[in-house]
Image (tube, rainbow, N blue to C red; front, side):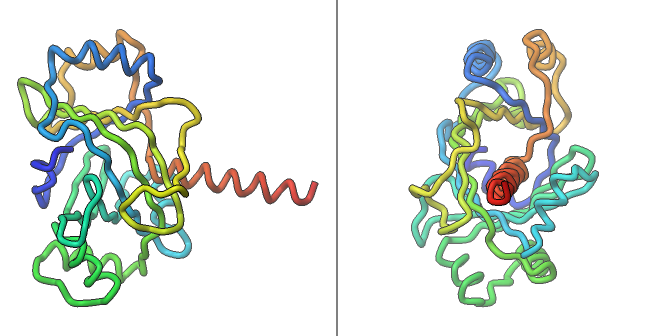
Length: 242
């Protein structure tokens, strides 16, 4: 997503995800050049801090794939300093349609709001997000980062394709930066392609995907990382008793 999009405080769209190995990525990437052009902010590193409660209710609910789910995250596009903009977001999904509310804050204002408990309830969206955080007793839980390539259709700027790679995470030192504690999710080079549109996907695009055996998948970045971490913990715990 470009910084142009990031300025929007409320929007809705249809999203689909696809997992591509490097061979599929290179093939599709070359094929799409005639239909798409690079976003103004074509290459970016995206950093997120996802919120949850002590029982991990938000992530567990997402893994169960309900018709409706929601999450809170803090996001930055690249490294940020105190006076740079970050985005406190509530992302809701119902029957495949994504609704997103976001508040633009400086990193300093966010720290004043969350860490120092200063009242910044100066707009409706921040009040909604603040209520949700307090009602469910949410706290920063996990850092998730990835590197993104962004494109938009030459015919429709609302039709966007992004490729995310180097999916990484950590559960400590929850700042919007990369650290040595980052852990890569995939063992090989993989790309998460996200297709975003207001009105569904055009036929020519779905034909390109199907002709190359590329099909949508259900893949939550934070949910998948959580499941992998839990499975790793269970395996290590099981070894202690065998």
